[in-house]
Amino acid sequence: MKIFYINNFLNEYHGAAIHGRKLISALEKLGIKIITYPSIIFENELVFKNKIKDKLRNMFPLWIQEIFIYFKRKIIRRIEIKKIVKIVQKEKPDCILVRPSLCDEVSLLIKKNTPIPIILEVNHPQYIEFFKHEKYRSAFNLIKNVEIKTWNNAEAVYVVSNVLKEIIKMNIENKDKKIWVIPNGVDFDAFKDINLGFHFKKKGIKEVSIGFIGSFHDYHDIDFLINIFIEVLNQRPNIKLILIGDGQYKDLVIKKVRDSNVPKDKIILYGRLIYSDMVSKLINDIDICVAPFRCYKKFYFSPLKIFDYMAAGKAIITTELGQIKEILTDGINAKLVKPGDDFGFISALIDLIDSHKVRTSLGYNARERVKDFTWHKVANRLHNHFNTLI
Image (cartoon, rainbow, N blue to C red; front, side, top):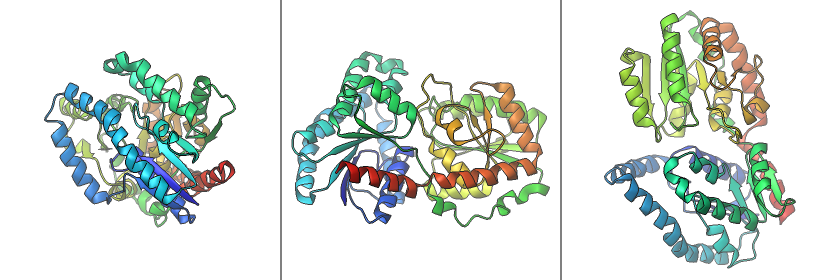
């Protein structure tokens, strides 16, 4: 089988890139040939190029950046489509998998030029995400109309959660459209050599490290997390907080940490790391992993960080929402807390700080549970769906 995968996020350095690259690797291990657009560049080179792009981007006001992004999507995509169609004609793939970006009509343009089946990969509904940002609300109808048009146009849609499936079904004309629900996964091989006893060796060491890995966005309640940490630090001074990531709220996080008057060695900001370095930090430097989320009426996420935390065999505290409560069970393989529940989160954190035994038990059970959610299994399920469609 041969698949043409179009994903503008492959050469970024956030969760969408990790998702795309790990999925490609797992599909290739099944003997499937994957052609990508754009071509993938090496991860170290990727970080270097994106740092340069970030510096250049920050030289211009936000409104200029947004105008550039819009015209890039609307105009450059129409130029790119000629290249994409040539690749399709040359490679003759069995199907085309597309992860669209904001206002991206590439799947509609392809459909006019080829009869090959098109599958959309949808990890989040963009019109809902951008409605949360007031500056985008004037373009809400445009964003929503383009997105729904692409959903209607595709032969099938691959989504990461049941909630996301329901959102799409609610908006499309054909209620019988093939919508495949396959949660995200983890590269279990990256964690296969860990010794669970090794990273719980800190039983006799006083300091316990609490870690968050991910993007600093509004749905990751970092402000809440820092407030909780400061509160617990007053009761348990033997702790530190490690924050690994970047994103639109990075400057606010830095300011929050600076204004907190917490000693510098108690909150450590690593910034963005390549995946292998993130895995190393997660395995060796963090005892308790946290993932607070804001409460959304429709929690459609399939959080990559949760699967990584589980594969590392860590004790996890996270929010009892959506797919998270389908995968994790409170008191068995994680501590689940109601959204925005300060007391519940503080109580769960203190329980884990004080009990090496509970951390070990939750971590072991989480690692066993995540074996059902590997990229290999995601690729197998997707491959079976591709076969039925073709």
